[in-house]
Image 1 (tube, helix red, strand yellow):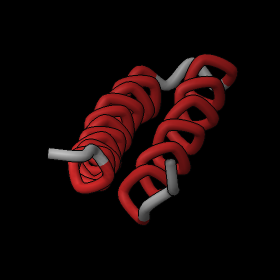
Image 2 (cartoon, helix red, strand yellow):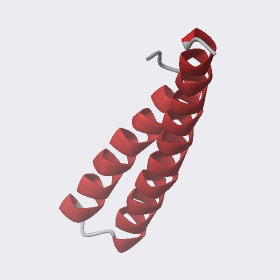
Image 3 (spheres, helix red, strand yellow):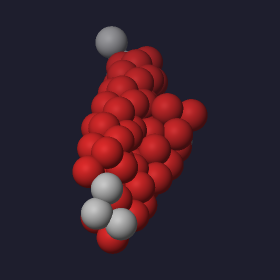
Image 4 (cartoon, helix red, strand yellow):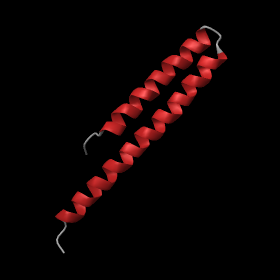
Length: 68
């Protein structure tokens, strides 16, 4: 299984969102907390899309290897 751009970018967004949420909590900024949570959700969705793409690609490779 490889890693694609969507997986990496999605997980980076998730991490950035967690940091932003934590900063929002530390500074008592609801706006930053919400923005951080939104970034986490978007990152999670993008990473999930990347995971799905890899699974489909791996499945296609596997079906090519099977004898018919």
